[in-house]
Structures are given as structure tokens and as C-alpha cells.
Length: 166
Image (cartoon, rainbow, N blue to C red; front, side):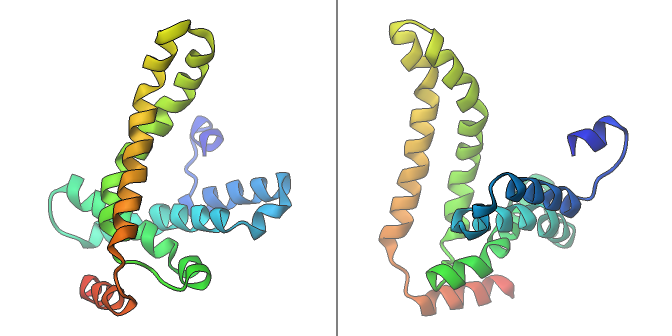
């Protein structure tokens, strides 16, 4: 994608994801057996392909409909591996992702530079630099634990997805 943009060419999102997945599988062929890889690829395809389509269909303020469209796109993208591997697709994943994903994104953006600085800064400064990552990962973990603790029965999940589809 970066190469195509640098050359002034557009690259379709699905083609971009396909090229990235192909490169990753060439580097590590065992990824094809990784459930985490399936979920990541599915979510990425959902965000890149389904998200914009849903955003065009839903009416409302752009930032809100965009957030919901991307979240629903990601959930639809992980639907098949989630059902095949875990036996269900929890409807509470939607609010959980709306609460956790923005924080996880900030942790990812801050995490790499913080890790580098953490290695070179002395004493207490290194802990200050990584503190946002610590707080963010605790938040994401707390959201996941709270949603897991609810224990929604599968019939409620199905009813919730049907309601959302309508």
C-alpha cells in the first residue's frame, strides 16, 4: 500500500490485504494454522471491505457511523473463524470492541517508541514513558474480563445479532 501510494497509484484494500497475507505466509507458512492469524486477517478484511460498505449504508454523523461500520465490519470478518473455533459469535463483542479498540490503537501507536525509549532512559523515566501502555493494556484486559464474566447464553447472542441485522 505504501509503495503504491508513493508511486501515485491506488491499491484496492482487498488487494493490499491479500499481498500482506501472502508475504506473511511466505515468511512463516505455519501462520495458516494460527487462529490468531485467521482472526486478524478476517478482522482486517472486514474493516477494509465491509466497513466502508456499511458506512455508506448507515445514516448519521460520520464519526459515529464510521466507528460502528468499522466495528461491525471487523465482527463480520471474524464471524466464520469465531464460530468454527469457539462455537459462537458473542454479541457483546460489539460494545467491548467499541470500548477497547480505540485504547488498543493508542497503545500500539505509543508502544513501539515507548519500548525504544524505555531501553535508553534512566530509572524512573523509563516507567513514565511506558505508563500509558500499561494503563491501556489494563483497560483492554478489564473490558475483556468484564464481557467474559457476563456469560450471555448462545440464544441471547443469536437474538442480539438478529436484532442488530434488522
